[in-house]
Image (tube, rainbow, N blue to C red; front, top):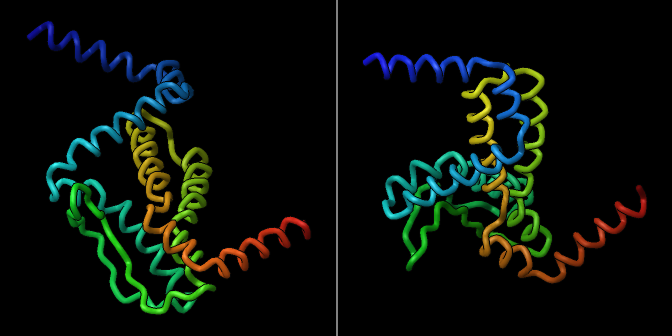
Length: 184
């Protein structure tokens, strides 16, 4: 029992030392390690559809909601919205949004809408370090949130197929991007 109390005391002393906290928070190695551990833990539960749903629910909601909102704004007429995983063959589809009016002008932005989540991650980063006291727990929560946001900002292969299914739309948005770069 004395040994256990000694271990707890040593751990508490180590964790309460501001220099140790700064080493942990300021070291990119620990950040990358934590992200990889979180992702490995996430993928380890994929053999169970219920655990898959639980682990992915927040990120899937953000990803699919971005499709839904942009599709709604651009007249793509979202008709279906799900955030519960379904097994299709050997893979899980964690969520989806169906549209009934995909056209050249709304296919690309509706399909690539999750990329906008990167802005959320960027502003969360700025807000977090300006407003939250950094502790081991808050930093791990920060890494967890950023991992969820950034991972779900990446469009799926289906998203890319829809986005580039209308060459006229791709040309239209590429022209807008080139014009914006020239004007700047």
